[in-house]
Amino acid sequence: MATYGVYGSHTTEACPLNHKENRMAVIESGPLFKQAAESAGVKVLVQYHSGLEHTFLWVFESPDAKRLEELMIKSGTVSFNSCRIVPLLDFDQLAARLREIDNA
Image (tube, rainbow, N blue to C red; front, side):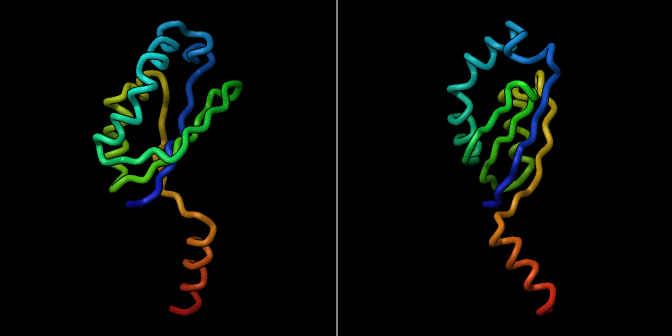
């Protein structure tokens, strides 16, 4: 499985701190998210949030980005957040790729 980051953001007005409907959605669906991810064959590694920036970074192991897209839709995450799904490498993986460039 590959590692992916989901970078998300929402407006100040849509923020669960300020928007009661979105706040209730997060409270109710939050505990179910990891279960939904597991059912989709996705492993949640970490979920970071910056409340005052209205952004988040969630990191997953997933067979592919399409599966993450489906999870974001089915979980309701995209109902008030925009999401970008990007492949991630750790530094050691990056260094190995860079060494391969000169050895190719």
